[in-house]
Image (cartoon, rainbow, N blue to C red; front, side, top):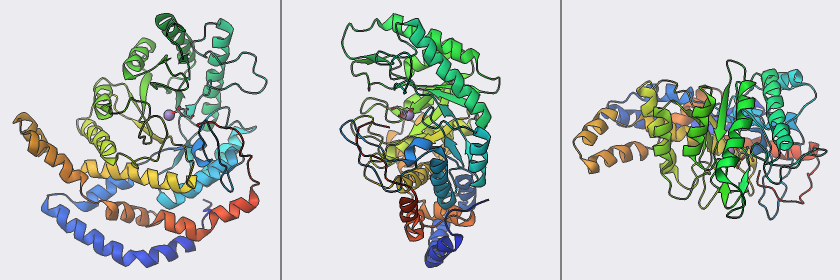
Length: 430
Ligand code: PSV
Ligand code: MN
């Protein structure tokens, strides 16, 4: 397997930090053992955790006002995969890439698959794109795609999704994620029921093209680019659509796609209970879908979501096998650094959730002891699991401090010299 970052650079950085890490791990192990928790078990589970990288996340994002290009941005899907390889080498928990089409179109998908395999990467869920017009496209998506009033436009969007499935098959993916920008900007602009019917009808055609072992993930979003209504605005509509389509359709939860203060962990619990939780697009947000780095604004929410996930896993809920993906837009940071940090933050929430004393919690819940119940969650959340995550990375050949090792490697300067700057004109929240 090709290692892009010189392993000696990682080892040199690790050598500086290893003694402290060992000591911190021992102290934490001692503290956890007093709570009846074996630190090595938690480490093993954290080590087995994986979250997919969004191919589009390694490029610099933007807002609808401007995009400020970063240095050495990937020029094509091969560069994107290489950047993902860097992330995986350092954090060791991002073994898959979720491609976005047609942004990631290639002439030879076997070659792309081999290129990814060389970095120890596979491909995850394929994302379709009917929220933008592509060059030479016959029908415009200005007024929608799968729910468009015009049948030929809907068919074009359906055909694109079916093409995504075909490309996904060549890449070894097993799911299609469908997010549409369809909706309306004015009250009265769109007939809600007719638009939803058309959306469902188009999705039925896509669903019919799914291979037996594939799933279809429906991604809801309450606003943007449509600002008054969206066709699939919330988990309720998503659930309705999934049940109309069939068993293989599930609801994907992008953390940034809800109104402020919505109780996302409860949505997660509901979807899991009814076997329709597809998985996640992890990110964080303060006001809207601004795709901030996972755990950067509300790490407690992330923990509470993982608390539900760990609980569902322990109860062995039927059909419970959520897919984890990051979906972020990096405007002011090096995307590689943001993605490494975010992957670790998601893993951190998972490890913290593993520490919840579930027996005690159930007792407090049944005994109506609200204070002790919430303290039980806080005890897990407030445990600094950093030594567990760092030790897991070290043992897997990754970096104790991925950002420090990455900076020491000089990778960004190297690719900046190889890859000419991408024009900084134009907006686009991608
Ligand atoms: C839309 O905001 C979204 O969350 C969807 O997942 C898209 O595929 C992705 O962002 C990229 O624009
Ligand atoms: Mn998303």
